[in-house]
Length: 371
View 1 (cartoon, one colour):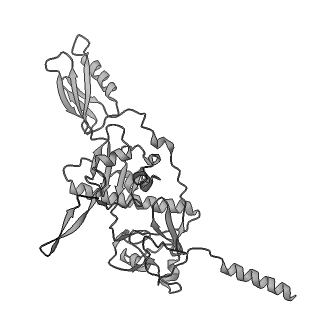
View 2 (cartoon, rainbow, N blue to C red):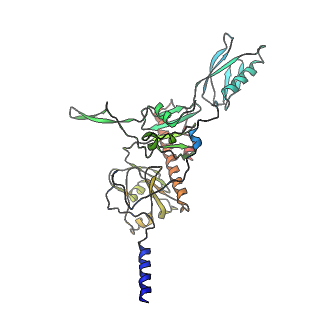
């Protein structure tokens, strides 16, 4: 009988020692890059698959849209050359042809329609040349820590590395030099220090983050990450010097919160206006590190609010998400959080880019970035 009690005691003790989630120690100092958090966050392998088709150039030809500029020439006609712009209605107006609909059509299709239209006015068959001079209808967003961030036309197949090169490459960090008792920013002529956070860089397409690893691409030269971009893609390389955390989900004011010193989860959520009435507080997600290989902790914020658990120390770059309903499949919940993050970030940064380039950017933030 005594032996039976000993066995039961050992089983109960072992069950009590099991870990059912990440543990936190709010008293522990914030970890450095060389001292990763141990026992608090769990690494998560994302299940979103990389589509090999992304590495192939688009097979569909370029189609015209509003804003595109064309040069049209009727061969042999002394006044048969002109430049036209596709109007907001998708039509062009060229000499006798009044309102030819070209939206969604290829250059060869437009050339054939011009030839057919001219038959109404000219007896002989005309040879027509159509040349694309400028692209406004199809663009990609290249923002963040780049030498020349902006919105770039996509008139031909372009890889991610080609797009970054077109934007001047990664922006180097200025070096502070002393001059007359003051400090001035100057760019080093030697080895520049890059300030882009490649762990948090992302490509958003159709409102979702693609599983592209910028560290593998730009640091290791892994061309398996060098995808071809599509019109409307949003590429962002954030600053490595950011001192903000991102509070999303069921809070009153989802926003980026700037840290001025050591901060906690409760303080960050309070800075976002607090939680809304229907928030599910027992499964608040805190995501840290790389977007492709994140460290994730699920926190019982309800217990923190009532003093049953210590508050959680947070770091710059952390993503905090307060859900409305409990998740059933964690991998789907993680994808939801990260997609919400990139959509919110893209909408905000895209709006800032338009404000900085008022009158020069002829398009608006893609609708799919705000879904």
